[in-house]
Amino acid sequence: MNSLRLQQISIRVDDKVLLDHFDVSVMPGEIVTIMGPSGCGKSSLLSLICGTLEPIFQTSGTIMLNGDDIGGLPPENRRIGILFQDDLLFPHLSVGENLLFAMPVSIRPKRERLKRMEDALVEADLKGFADRDPHSLSGGQRARVALMRTLLSSPRCLLLDEPFSKLDRDLRERVRRFVFDHARDAGLPTLLVTHDAADAQAAGGPVITFGGDPETA
Image (cartoon, rainbow, N blue to C red; front, side, top):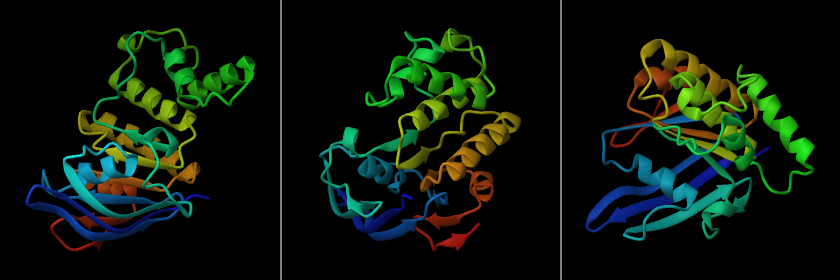
């Protein structure tokens, strides 16, 4: 199964050092939380892992995924799943089409793709929602569709960039449990960036505070 290892990661922009020789290992199914003030490099680290960090940043270090150095690969070849504050569902596609869009083209024939899409909706407690417009969904439903779309892309690890921050408390707890349970069940090494200590506690894994000392949740 996949593991994520970051070795000697440094990120600088202009004269500001965001990260300096940062190391972390995330095992399959483990959720490591990163906390810290805005501007300390949390989201920049996730962008570096994805391969989408802007060229203005100077970086060094090694990103290993399942023993492979992925640092030189284009984003589309890294197989990194990421969830943001916004679900980013395509508004011009139905719920089912959003899920189908995420699947690798290697998954054939069409009936297999449709089966996986329908199975994902059942798993997300959204059976019969394939033809629904994303705008007709509640916040929690949209969050579940976004996660299932990410998982259908067959990622090798999962990055979570404040994905629960716009949800109210009760919904946040339910969606958080849904996301964490699926990440663990899929054996995905997961990095969570959050400002909320309750997110870190629910994740149940190590907590790293940028600008502070590592601790255990």
